Length: 68
Image 1 (tube, rainbow, N blue to C red):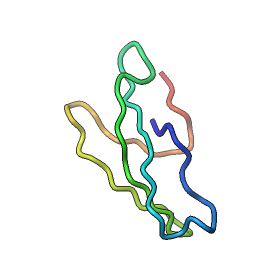
Image 2 (image 1 turned 90 degrees about the horizontal axis):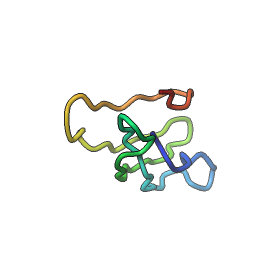
Image 3 (image 1 turned 90 degrees about the vertical axis):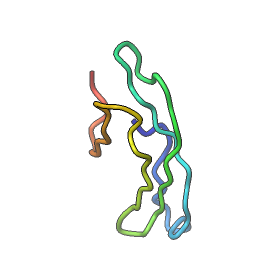
Image 4 (image 1 turned 60 degrees about the horizontal axis):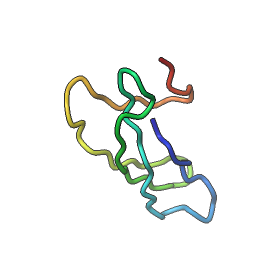
């Protein structure tokens, strides 16, 4: 779950931002966290993601907030 705001402003185009991602656990919304890099490219965003540290971890993208 992304904890920071995705850069969307016109003056942020072409700039990389380090944003905090939370890894939800069985009993908490954020067991651990790490940084990913996001670049605003105007009409789209580029994400530099780290390899998941264990199975079964994955990245999910969408507009809905994380639901348990």
